[in-house]
Length: 267
Image 1 (spheres, one colour):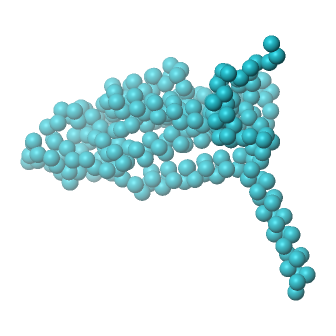
Image 2 (cartoon, one colour):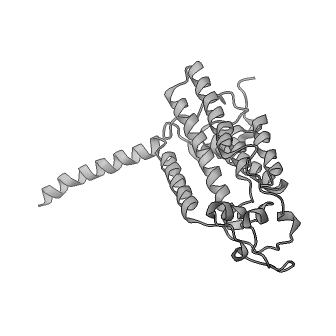
Image 3 (cartoon, one colour):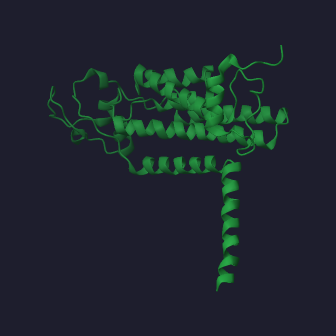
């Protein structure tokens, strides 16, 4: 029986070793992280309702009209922040005859950036439960509801589930965070962000925090696979994991600590 165990041992070790090399030398962890975030976001989108803060029916801050037609609908926000930048990146990589590795890193980084921004934004929205400026128009409080008294969602007569519950998802602005994550500081960012105030979906704080959130996640996602913008090879992504002595966050930490003190070459 002993020889049988010896034969099975190396086979199991070989499989484990192969999996370990695959895990460390490819972007498998990033793909897995993306899949987990996407699945978690979809579950949250379908099953999680926001925290419903109490409100006054005579609160002027939530008494704005509900815009049936948005200046930048969700679909157009996807066009501005997803399809336009994606198209630009694909065209640029094709024109410059980028390597397969650069293609992979470009789109993987972009996808993680957007899904992480969306997940964090919706997570905060549901946890905070801040009423939108048009909450009362969505809620349609029942006749006889007393003013100057805190009331709950129970006084609302609106039957459209999403329309009503989305009234407590004001902070932070999803349009702004998604736009800044996908487009950086280009003009389309501001077009998608500022109009959210005009539609009474958010106030200025929702938009500013959403924009900052999107930009921070965009920078985090970018720096995971690309050098500093001041580096000589900033136009090329880092090599595959495992192909350098230092990779991932160790490499990022060393680059940030080195700063501009790194010599450019022999003097």
